Length: 269
Image (tube, rainbow, N blue to C red; front, side, top):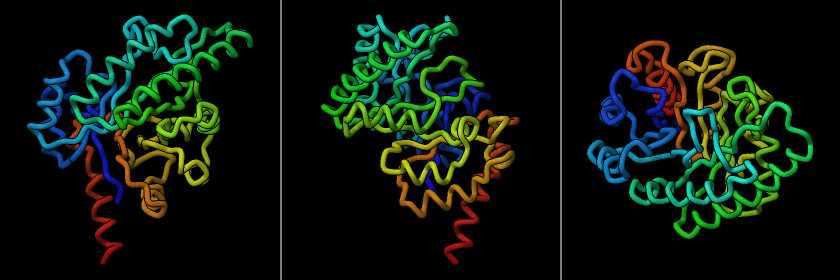
């Protein structure tokens, strides 16, 4: 059975962020991920991980002005200096926390963006990703990019797994991988198993949530038990991030996790 990491941005919201580490550990998780750690010092976050014997699976580079609606900088012409600063800041946290991979959000395009601007965005994206991957490689870290569906995040630069892997190939850095969130991928293109098989070598992280509601992965149109078996079949040994919004109290919705563990035990027997 795959290894599951609790997403502390979405899960265990019943308590403040510093207390979510203990809550995740108590619920049986061995790793956590989250969007951004930057409201706290690297030493503080590293301490919460250490105190609760948790691994840090993933977090995002600073995304620009999140409160004003920015969703990343990597593909935005004119923001190269800000992006490079975000790489340095993320590395400070990754080294303190022992985080092996970080995600660079691409950013939003204006609704009236013409083809010339889109081309400039792609060129900027390729250059920024190459820079970030090389900086991270100095510290044996992996850079991730994630296609995000346009329903949840209209205007996001990168939407499909196919485009993500085309970008990865164009950049050509060995430590650049694509994050496959089955929730986003199902909304954008579907055909999840075939897509995962096709791009397996270039996938650096997996996330899950039900579709369409983005709740626990025990409802909706995606057959997660089948996909969990596929991950095992292909030898995926990374973390699976639980990036979903619990329907109610987080602990009350973890029956899917227990069912998955029991199913694995039954198959072994």
